[in-house]
Image (cartoon, rainbow, N blue to C red):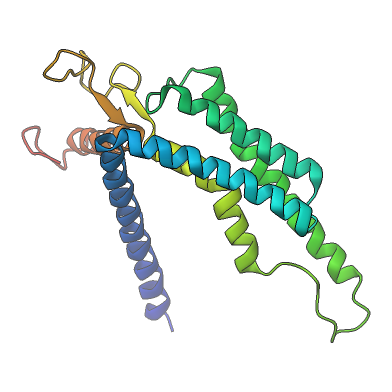
Amino acid sequence: MWILPLVGYLGSIVGFCFLTLAIASGLYYLSELVEEHTVLAKRLLTQLIYFVIALQLILCLVDGFPFSLTLMGITSHAVYLGNMRRFPFVRLTDPLFIISCILVLVNHYFWFQHFSEMQHKSYARMSSMYDQPDVPNFTEIASYFGLCVWLIPFALFVSLSASDNVLPTMGSEQPSRDVDGKNRRHGMVKVVVDNVLTAIGEVSRLAGWKKPEDRF
């Protein structure tokens, strides 16, 4: 068969594009909700950080998770909590924000290494092919990463806002202002999506695919 595999590749690409658009649309909508309900979002995120810290402590005490990694996770969430002091505004050059971004990657790497080593050691202790490895399954590991590693950084990324003079849109010279003359707040997700769409539109015009007066 020659054509069917090509159809499969094409379908995968189209499906990936639709999935990406769906995620971007959902994030865009969530960002607008946070802009409209800032106080509620801050209270919810703060309680969520405390919940994750308590969950990591319980996992360490009950299920025997490594103390060093648990301490690193709790410290990371304490740093995330520091970003709430000026919520929902953020400066991308703020040392606390930069440290938070680094800690997300560090936590992911070390917890991934921990679960990988746990799996290798469990398989090494098996004496026969009928033994069952004593390791968390994929659902449990994915749930831990989703709740204890990525949930708070992802929620902060959706919730935090940046003014136009922090992330300027292409072609804009002056930061946009609201009716009171103050700098208008924009969610980081909205800024990223708007900049990506603007960049795609600029590339399309330069390539001659679109006329200058056409809207994206």
